[in-house]
Structures are given as structure tokens and as C-alpha cells.
Image (tube, rainbow, N blue to C red; front, side, top):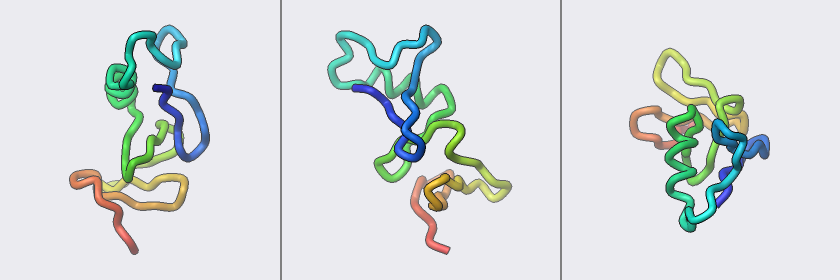
Length: 78
């Protein structure tokens, strides 16, 4: 599995510049590493650190124009 930002198309790369791990057939290792490296997963989409912001009210604002509750990870319609 390769982790790709669903907003800008950037590939997640680990500290060694790798975009996937051989033997990680379900992608769980790579995804866990991405999520611990400031990537987020909301609404079945991955977002790199450049494609979201966390506001003072604990809401994620993604570059695709969506707003998410940071605690529940539910989309907020304004």
C-alpha cells in the first residue's frame, strides 16, 4: 500500500525516503507511520500536513474545503 494525500497527491515517504514497505501487504505499518508523522485520515481520505490546519476550536480544515471535528473525526457542515 502506498499512502497518497487525497488533496494534493503527495506520497508519504518515511525517514529513508521509502514510499512503501516490502512485506507490508495490507499497508498497516506504513499507514501507522504516516499517522504518527502528522498525516491524518478523515472521511476515508489521507491528508498530508500541508493540506489541513487545526483551528482554536479543535476543528480540522482541509484544503478540499471540508471541516472536521478533531475529537469525533466527523465532518461538520457549516
